Length: 250
Image (cartoon, rainbow, N blue to C red):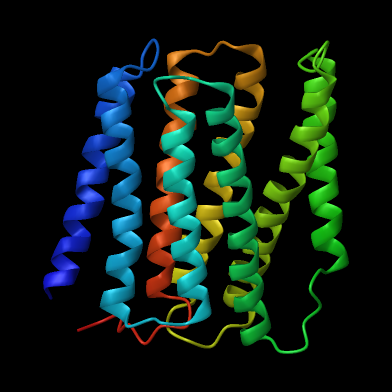
């Protein structure tokens, strides 16, 4: 019961800290925005940890999700560094890139365990990934985002491929659970894994368009940050539902 109460308080604290962070983050980063972003990032890691304790979920999926959350924490710290050095951006970029790969492996572990014999990639999964990637890069090129910054095209192409693979892999598992699952946690899996993957993708795509341009609006930034933290919280909570004996009802 204690861990459940703490989980509820953690989610509530996240709902308070993220808006405060956004308040201080406009128009630019400052010491207070850095503090509240670190707190907000630490809260989604704590959320995942509490879900492990509540559910007793010690599966590879739970371990991988925790690693993904920790990498997200470090990505937030590096990207919001007050020193704003180029190597901080690189480390933050790599933290999120590796984090997405960890999430992909976690979703694949879930698919393989639930549906033995499933291929690593389905044709429709790959098709969706490449269509989304091509669409994003085409729009960016048309907007002139990569003009004079061709190296970014390669970096964003690689990151985009990993990002959309994470999305399609997560949706493959989440939709599969709704379509074929037989356990009581089907809806929980769909809402946490599926929606979490979607929100993370929305956040990263928005960021991908705003970073090279060097400017944004307050509304766009709020959507970018709000979807990101919501995604991390949902993915942390997914530990309660994926290969967990967590009872839905007392």
